[in-house]
Amino acid sequence: MLVLTTEQIGLFLGGIIWPFVRISAMLMAAPVFGARMMPVRIRILMAVAFSMVAIPMLPPVPAVDPISFQALIILFQQVLIGLSMGFMIQMVFQTLVIAGETIANGMGLGFARMVDPANGVQVPVVSQFLIVMATLLFVILNGHLLLIELVVESFRWLPISEHGLSTKGAWEIASRGTQMFAGAVLVAIPAVVAMLVVNIAMGVITRAAPQMNIFAVGFPLMILLGFVFLAATTPSILTRFAQLMMDSFEAIQSVLSTR
Image 1 (cartoon, one colour):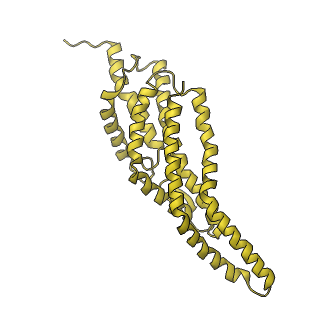
Image 2 (cartoon, one colour; image 1 turned 90 degrees about the vertical axis):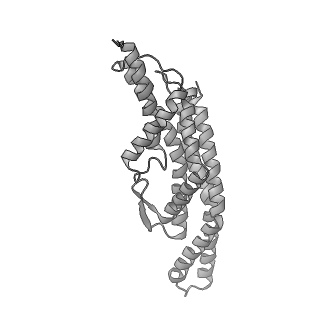
Image 3 (cartoon, rainbow, N blue to C red; image 1 turned 120 degrees about the vertical axis):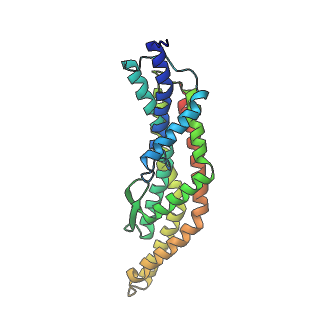
């Protein structure tokens, strides 16, 4: 007769549930995987599949009663770690949203908005264009595979226990917010400076010929030149996005390995 002790049951359940919780939390917060157009059932199946593949490679989990307060703390820590990983990658995509908003306002397309299917919010069409390009680049560069590898390696850097992210790691995650806005400025500044030069030129023309209707001439010209500058700067924008993505992967490793 097979007899299982409480410790054996807790060890078995913990070895399955806690990795699944961390991986599913990462998938919920990460771009592409966590998009609203991704069905929840598909996301759950992916989390189960990734967990089943990763469990044999994970270090031993602590033997904890699954209905104890200690197990609840461990569960909370796994959710926090997974959400932090996905959130740091999500901030890179939001960098392009902020940059697209700035570029759209500069070229006069700030009013032209559409619903972002990934997040369910309205963003300027320029931001939507940059998000689509960034998503394609993310998949082409195997960013989704790197993210999966990163969450599996996170169990080695930060094993399953009551101790989760350190205070230093939490502050480092918060500091990524400032880098998100700084990255948005670096992405948008070439097009913004070009549009500023066009605005100055239109102001000089209006000063020289006051009888000319600046709104009838300047508004279409601003939009046309805005698309020209956007097409010219798109390669540098995507290069900057790839660099920000690699920096985020390195930052995740630094946060999880910080004690």
